[in-house]
Length: 448
Image (tube, rainbow, N blue to C red; front, top):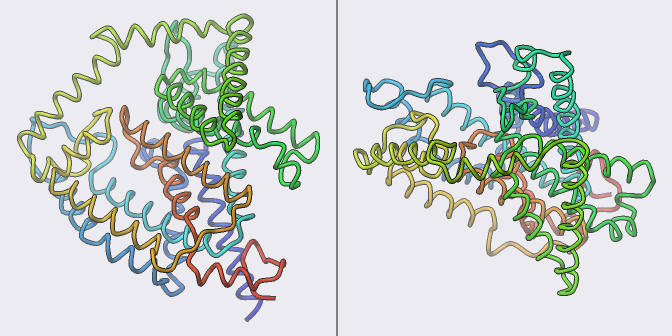
């Protein structure tokens, strides 16, 4: 019995870590061209659902699934309508059938809920290590991305070869190849900004992490995270994603603002700005003309025929669809290239869908927080950083949705996972942890 439990724990940990690590790699694990819109980690979702549903549903999981059922049913009916309605006036979603998009969304939702439930039964050390695992996966993508970038310009790699490992290959200002290993440039730029923000947060808290012997203990470990920081800021620049630059600046402001001492707020912000300027000057002087990226971005913002102009045009055309179908929308998964997911969702599922979505969100929030049974978790540095990383993820996901589509992106659901595992714990779980001894098995809490 003991060996069976241990084996099950090991397998659940493997699935949890695979969901995070393989998810960040995206299309770096390529599938056939027929499955181009599917990422490799999506294939893990049915396995995750089947495995975790073998056990009994926990009360909280059951409540969330039941509460979301009306919204899920509404989205399913809307997706069926979008799949079979015959109208030439509204473009169909060419990359994915609406029903496939719905199925993917639901599997992502269920998988994240089930995984988060298991993570919440583990220690804060395990949760914190998942963030570090995410950074390690991102580091691999950054190295591969720079390899693609350099390989293309030394005529070692062709565009067709690079495309096998990316969703898109795009060129930016001055014909610059935009880095986007495993995804597409706008998505990867946002992921780069998030990873860079998290690494910056770790360095801001370096003294305390070192004092508690959590990170930066050895020179090798410190050198590793310095290299991560350098690679992250490099690929952030080379992704040439303007919204990612904005989200990174907002992240610096957030990190500075959350410093406890008032004097540290300003000092931290000034230090990060100074470091950012130094890196910019070095890259501008010796590596690449970054200024041209910002100039091109500004021109496309003010010129009607630039990317901003095309976005505004897309928003206006989608608002026409909404005015024709305000209550129920044109069908979930039906619109293409809206470049604003809030607007896209409004046009696809209508006011009825949004109201149902809002009601479901409020109920789930109350279920998860469990107002009557929640007490605050101990304020250790790991809990504090986990909460801040969650906030950084929310910032990036919500901002990116204003100018792109990210409902099925890995970072979006990694963000949902962080929200579910970083809220205060139920009293019962907290009391269980308080009577546990210091021994753990695979991060699982148990009484000694």
